[in-house]
Length: 414
Image (cartoon, rainbow, N blue to C red; front, side):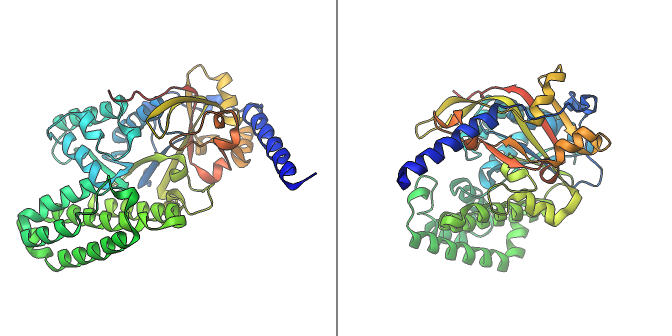
């Protein structure tokens, strides 16, 4: 038997096994009375500074609505006022402006976050709720919306130069010219020399802003200076990231950790709420590089609280080269098996609440195949769990899980 034939047979066997793993029953019955089905009652320990909520797939309506539901509960029970998304830092400032009475519509604001997966009715509804909340909030108790990603240029440049135009016009003119080649449209095709020059220029601007901090702050205030400087830093990081090649993922998550640290230093008190893909939020990475959650767990210990998600039946907006198409996957594991005893479409399990239940502890201590789709899979990959699950030990990865029977595609903006 030749090598090619052996390889094909081995791949076929692995894929068949993958199908069986995705569809098989693996669980003992645990005590589901320990599960919550009322998310409005969700709370975390008072020592927690950062709460991360993961989503097993982008492009899911229920996961996007979950961001709002969990954040609302944390606002009520833990005094959480800061929402941080896996989205562009500068673009998310457009949402921050909108929820504080800025012009335009919620749909326009969330469209600036930087990714097509957020241009949905669900995200617009979240922005509108935050705006309504802020209209009635006592002074100093308003909500905030920030981004922790750094894969875009345009909105970072817009905020940066809106500040420098007022406070340091000569500096603004110099670097508007220097950064002219750095645009969102050009980003995927920028030459390495342009990216290297962009890093050099961005660092020079940061140094110049630091040298003129007193003058800029006197003109626009300390907060505007801090956010403008971080926009300049995001431009540097985007150049670095785009040029990074195989180191892209680890570098990106490292910069997201730095953004979270920055928001804690310059933001609006703790705890803060983070939301992104499960692969970023979990305390253990299945992808072989230090993910955001693992970095936060190492830095903050049990002051970082991570919540993962999964579903037995997932229909989602799968991103393609030309737009989106709906795909469907199914995943049977020890968590989804418990749904047979739950009357609701979902449950939340705080792992500490299950500490005395031997069956739950058995489930949490054993590797489980948990759903983990990024922005899309192909038509044939949806039939093989190898392409949409990751094997993780839940107790090592999360502090709680929200598990759905079925979830549906997000509603794309018209």
